[in-house]
Length: 141
Image 1: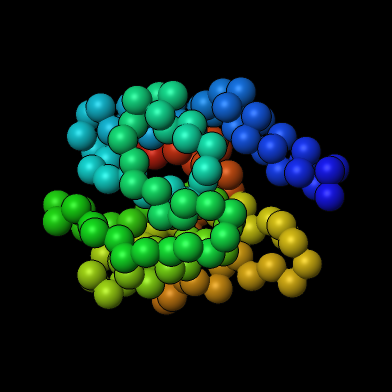
Image 2: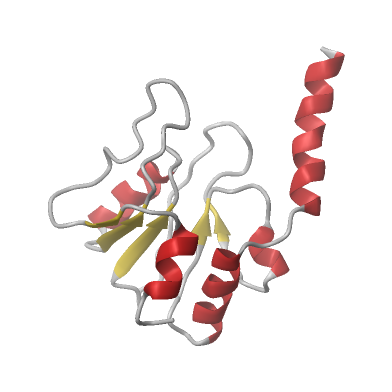
């Protein structure tokens, strides 16, 4: 038990010490320019705070504690970045609101039997790469 508690606490220490990536910086630039209207995240590292981007947390712990998302009425699409399963609940809610789904996902196996793009539907847009590879190439940047 002692080693497990140390590992659990180390996650928080690592998150506090982490530095924003180039993708975080791009998101911050898009936010400042008004091209991104709302940021939702299931990441627990709070790296967006380090680049001064306000965000809505869609998960409050390592447990599946999801809640209803209130989307900004100005947005028309949801840009989904990453490979985690946790985004499925937000995507379902976005679809119910009629939002277009755009995904950046490198399609990496993150766990045995992981399903990391089964949330996509015909008509969705998928960039099969990492955010740091795709975001700098987008015309809005």
